[in-house]
Figure 1 (cartoon, rainbow, N blue to C red):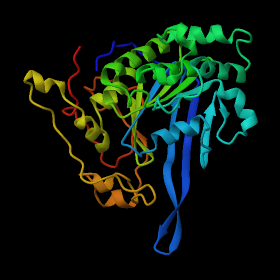
Figure 2 (figure 1 turned 120 degrees about the vertical axis):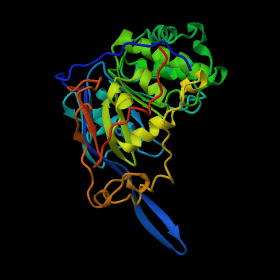
Figure 3 (figure 1 turned 180 degrees about the horizontal axis):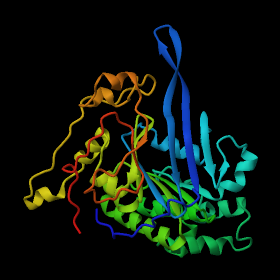
Length: 360
């Protein structure tokens, strides 16, 4: 996938956060049948997650399937009600707000869903899909159709196709319709939950370039969820790495990609394809994790990554490592020493030999 590089907006560290998540917890009650008995358990999907996002900034959430990325996004949009913790939007805690008070805020926080085939109502025309949020929020009264055509043009689709149904569009075109729907109410924050993972590689670049252009033109803030580290690197200002419901490392791009310190981050980066191998350059170090992630119903004590970590010691089983501010990595560290870089690990270690060189 090739995409036009962008210059992301770097928000001042002194800016008031647009979104501030503090100690977010989301547990789900589940029932399991074992023989003739039924037991009740709790899935700890998200456990004590904290981060912030300033206006114009893009934060990437990355991690294996089931680590809690999508649950965090659904809590922020209040499609799920958090078990505990705070979600402050422009300083106001929305974590437990009733629906009546949430409705005005829903206009400012929108979501782009992963699957463009199931996120659009097949019985509605594109025009109906785009004008419904306008009517709900009393926008563009009497000019809904014109606004819908304007949105289609904004995302690179033919405005004359407003009366077509989703089934008449390709996957990439459907995702553009989903983006247009999110933009219809002029939001401040867009949460993109793996918006390109269901698309062909050639179409992924087109959609990513569209999102980059819209972010630049409209001054949007993004929380971007993806498995693809290349997509995150292209699009995001900061990156939060999640494992089994917790953030294990958070920092700006140069820190995460240049001087990763958490073993799990290092393993993710080492698994990314190295384009320099085809040029005859020796491959970078590979880290192969053994086993599958533990169940979120019964996560390991202490550090949740310890069961797959090659550095694990006795303290890792008895004490949970706090998410602590770490220096950039030394006097010769290119990312700089003044930026936030936090790691939840008892034995952080910088590795520079993992990350594939990026073609410029």
